Image (tube, rainbow, N blue to C red; front, side, top):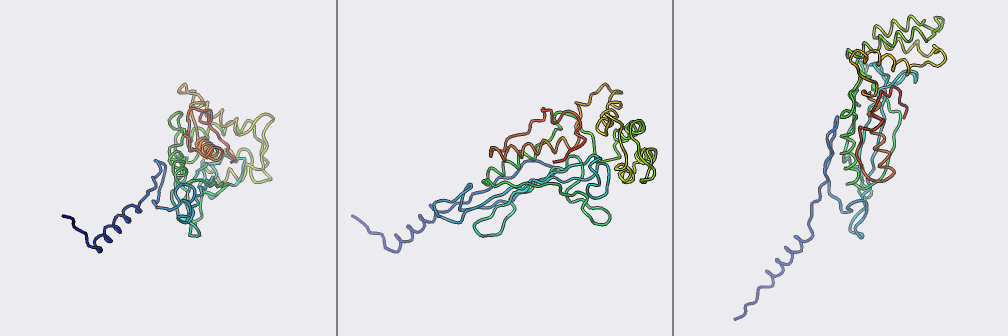
Length: 292
């Protein structure tokens, strides 16, 4: 005996099957560990980096890499002179826009590189770090999320020891500045008429008055064949001789920033997130000066 299903029931079953076949809920994966990282999950009808045969608006994703700097060992905002080393913090942000909509933050991460946070302000509420450079690149959502994950793990710490360019409270930093003051006395000539003598500069460094030292430094001249990089290297090596260590066993924040910038540059060139190699020469020996 044959039975016929009612027309209304057939219609209901057909709608249910169609609904099940067309539904989906894609998710974006978050970034890896960093000084800080946050992510937002969103679905898109466009998929990875393009449309789906006119099924919906196209998604466009952009990553922005920024270099933020201040004078090393100073709590004053920004950079006062390129004659003094910087501390460098980096940030990486990913936004995606669907069609003509508003950009939505997908991933945000930063590397303070053992130093100042991007949000740090002084007593007056002024940002301590200033942006010295930024670059952007457009790519697919998944590729950019993978880039943030690689960036979040990108430091020299696994290969060499860190020396702070941010905290004067570090005992090694205090010894370093004492030793570099001796080098300055021997090789730097500062004119008193311009605001301070060589001895004034030396005393400022020994007291940890970096702002005063930076006011005097631009008026000074080095002996032939000498400069602050050589003075800092010599000062650090004098300190390391006590423990039979070498310069190549240390890095500073700028080494980390340069390594992170190398990861970024590689992604711009190849479109692949890659990984950071802390065993490269970028991590061996303090990069006192860094001008991205």
